[in-house]
View 1 (cartoon, rainbow, N blue to C red):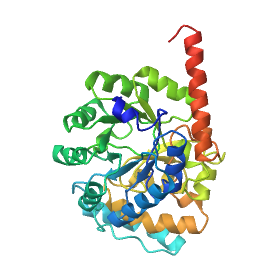
View 2 (tube, helix red, strand yellow; view 1 turned 90 degrees about the vertical axis):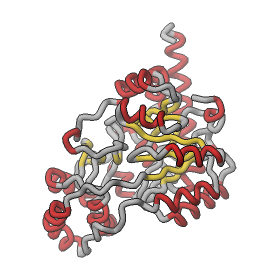
View 3 (cartoon, rainbow, N blue to C red; view 1 turned 45 degrees about the horizontal axis):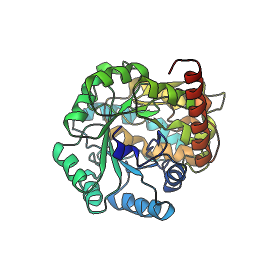
View 4 (cartoon, one colour; view 1 turned 120 degrees about the vertical axis):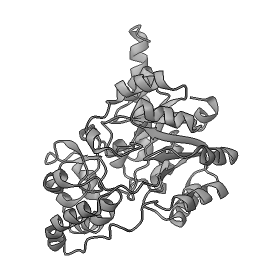
Length: 357
């Protein structure tokens, strides 16, 4: 990774931005103070809500941090399919005594307004999910001193990130929890994503910009593995979801290691876009029928998910988690960074001692 970007965080550990209230300023600050790169998630927030969190984070740490922004989504959803799914969810609404949300509540996530805030109040790093910003957007952020990253799930997407002028690409393997950062939502490719190590190797041959590896990473030894494979840093989400500072619902945190939830799946059930979560009742019953319609389905199910959380029913919540969720550790975020750094150092020492590095 370019030395200027690397200098922002001493350890090759990036806390993934997790939207929906998980990546709160307290979590990002703790990671930054421990030597990693903490991230705020601007997704599903207003521009002012994002700005207020940036102000709060700056009051908690003087270390560099990042902000993640969702790209606007094209209009491709079939309204009839959304209506059919809404009828299917009527029983859920009755059960949780909640109204279904308005699927037409907006699809650009306040993108332009957020860019204005980020240009007027520059932050050290901005990353993008669900696509690639234009060269003009990247250049504007560069002019105010911001490093730009964007997610990619294929070598072709990584090439698009490089062409846009981004400083690094986040290579997101299919193991990752939460939404896949695919640039185009193509239902025919559901479940066919690349595993992280294979993706790193292919992206490394496809582009010349640095790689941040993401997907299923829970231990320092795995960080050592992706660094050896060619990444410059590792991005961890599920590992930080269970930390004390995480804003995740307590039910969500406990579910990561609850024997009741034994595996994860990619599903469209909650948002209309492929996202990996713990398999619960809602996912099993509705996943097979959810249409490709993001963010319409996200808006539609939002009141149901909130009502399920309020009722203490994890079976109706979106329990986003990566494939390594059973390895989650309930620690303060700063202590987790220290543990990961120690494991990384031990793994490197073992490889070096064995003549492998």
